[in-house]
Length: 176
Image 1 (cartoon, one colour):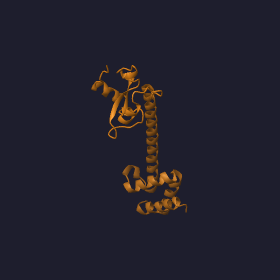
Image 2: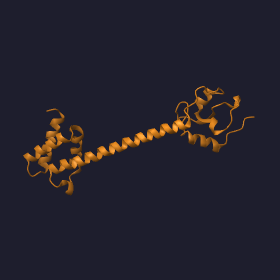
Image 3: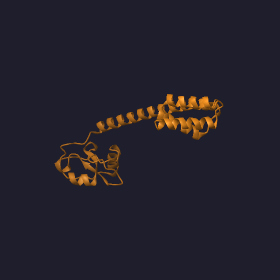
Image 4: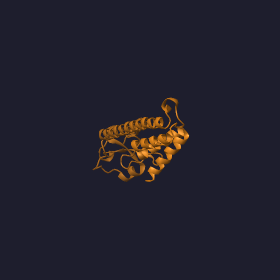
């Protein structure tokens, strides 16, 4: 006689499998999840958590009482795969943060050329945003050269220096 799977055990299986169908990867709310027996009850399978897997209703109905010849990835392999993904994401975020920090440092170096003392006193956010955009597009040395040219033309810095700097950078971005 078939023994019902308790709600607690059903939830533990869903939780262990990340609320994802092991066969097709579907997730709620687009599907209703069910607990499937890897080794069917009709073939002697039990309600042991090791014999249970999360399945969406269409996959579970499609499988029926058939024995799986291709068992989904083991939980240990899934955990290892997820851990690897997380490590890669963490590494990616660290690299992106390092790039952001480098761009901020370069931005303030350029700002200081355009307007001496701006790293200490601050600078208009729009100006800083433009400098950062130019750095991403042209690179540090091109932007530094543009800032030095602008500062040489307008020795006292300020808005005219910044606008001239922007013109140089825009022309370089267009390849002029």
